[in-house]
Amino acid sequence: MNEVISDRFLSIKQAANLFNVSTRTIGRWEKAGQLPPKTRLSHKTVGWRASRFQEFMDTL
Image (cartoon, rainbow, N blue to C red; front, side):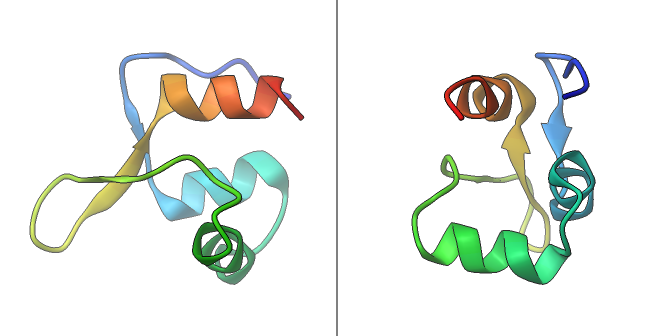
């Protein structure tokens, strides 16, 4: 997989691109508890800390 920069946040679209899946699949994985917890960045925006996402991908 691509190297992820550790000090930024990933949107659902960016997360989907990393796994080459749809954003809907990311939503299903999130609901099933298969992804690390996301962080609320504003009242409309959420994202995953890239470093936590990288750690998660390393365990696969």
